[in-house]
Length: 112
Image (tube, rainbow, N blue to C red):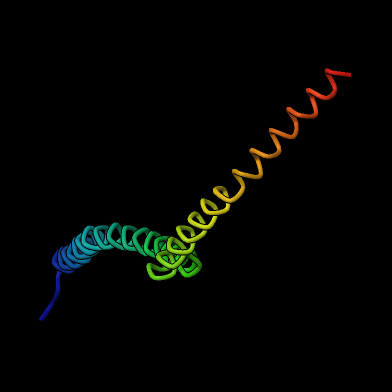
């Protein structure tokens, strides 16, 4: 079996062309993977950012009053408002006496 140089060079050219075609197809297939990998990396970074934001919000919400404590504060404020109203009613006669005293003193000052 003898191989002619033209046949061998044709077979080598065919093998190299086949390898080049396979490499080109592989590159085309992996370019989509690279794009997907880039998108996945961006999504992972966004997910980490959102996770940090959620953790910050959760930490802040721990310090806020819950429904029961908010209700207790409202009841206490209502009670305080009632006490202030009662105190205001008690102070009205004292304010009236003070006004009469001031008027009396002004009249005394005008007569002299």
